Amino acid sequence: MINYKDLIIYQIYPLSFFDSNDDGIGDLEGIISKVSYIRNLGANAIWLSPIYESPLEDNGYDISDYKKINPIFGDMETFKKLLKVFHDSGIKVIMDLVVNHTSKEHFWFQEALKGKDNKYHDYYIWKDKQPNWKSLFGGKAFEYVKELDEYYLHLFAKGQPDLNWENENVRAEIKSVLKFYLDMGVDGFRCDVINLISKTHGIPNGKPRFAVRGLEHYLNCPRIHEYLTELREDVINNYDAFLIGEGVFISPEQSIDFAKRKEVEMFFEFDHTNADCHLVKWFPKKFKLKNLKKELNKWQYALKDDGWNTLYFNNHDQPRSVERYGNLYFRESSAKFLATYLFCLKGTPFIYQGEEIGMTNAHFPELSQYEDIETKNVYKTAKKFMSYKHFMKIAMKVSRDNARTPMQWSNEKNAGFSNVKPWFRINRNYKEINVRTDLKKANSIYRYYERLTYLKKTSDVLKYGDYTDLVPKSNKEVKYLRKYKNEEILVVGNFRTKCSVINTLGYTNILLSNCENKADTFKPFEIRVYYKEG
Ligand code: ISL
Ligand code: CA
Image (cartoon, rainbow, N blue to C red):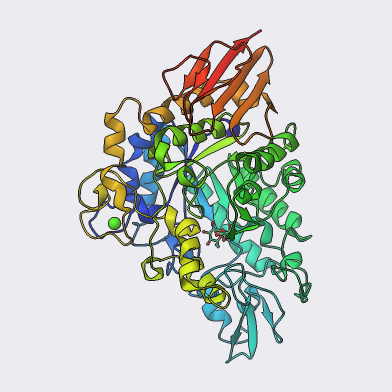
């Protein structure tokens, strides 16, 4: 049985990971060639962002054929090879499952457009009159189709029509997709925006003055449990597999509810990503450590006995944490600090490609340099009330493209990602920040992660211990306890940019630390993990 509580999951964004065949785009052979890199880091699972056939309007989160691999990444044989190679190395493979919507190029949608009596028309959500819902990518959530004189729902981009889960044929199709990959040996799925798949029957208008209009009609709506239970009982539970949900605006109580019903083992929550913004990242506020702690603590305490946490700072949608929360002047120590803080909490940790070498935001100054559909769409709305200059100032910090630049493998041309011009710009700092440099250096961020992943995997107290934050209000220090049976761990860190004396409560045995230092005075961004027995 897979114990998902034992996993350390490395997220791969295939477009930007490694190009094996000189077309400037990352691919499956590229991922295969890096298996030892991932194994040596200590990850025992990978999550692949979507690799299915797709027009890539939303970089693969718009699927046009669930049972085909996008030829730019490889083919089904190469995917089977990838599965074997990773499994042979003791690494589980988790795929991304995007079933709230498809691409508009999907055969089902193309058929749906042919007429109201086409079998596939009801696979999507249509209305004669346009409800007032807003898209999560900016603008309206409904798009008019002249030939049908109807509007279809797209919670994301226009090219991502929402599937109608009320239609049992849709559910049967999705189950067949799950079965297809589970039969091949896939170990689980990260389920994209899974708490949005059920909509209020009839698609009524949303509350008029609500910021995200329509939200109350698709967020955790009643049939969600019925749908997920059906997937579990008819398919997933026949395999040794598990689900990670992406839970838009999900609360700890809801996450526990899903876990107790044995529908989704764990969720990506979003609360802690609001430590530097007002609800959505486009309205930034100054980052404060105590705001981050407040949200992480809320989840740590609430899921003490039931449910299970995911631990993440980075993914393909989030700007790079080393500069979002850390400090670029202390890039190495603050990257290690954040990793330690995160990994020693209770839950399954995630590493997003490049995080293990402290990759930073891209800061592209012009909108024309961006690829991300969300960034471009949001600008269309934002320009009505802010200047281009102001928008770009925000985008440089928060755009999803900050996380999507090609992986920096070496200081060679194109950062060693590809021999030809890559599909997307490389971060200018690749000569200094890259894997080769980190592998050569004994105390690099990568080398620190090797120790951290080992510690997490081999320590029961880090996996299962109770958690207590000793300084929840502090913006300057991290200090928390983990306790399990007769073992204790104390994590203590100095979040200041200057040295500081910190009381380590009599603990003396340091298991891991990002500085060679035992003194009472902590260096800037120094963090230590202490251990005590009995
Ligand atoms: O990225 C976000 C904010 O910048 C989120 O609102 C994001 O759109 C939301 O978390 C859903 O994300 C997932 O589904 C999207 C896709 O674009 C994201 O990449 C994916 O992680 C639609 O499929
Ligand atoms: Ca390629």
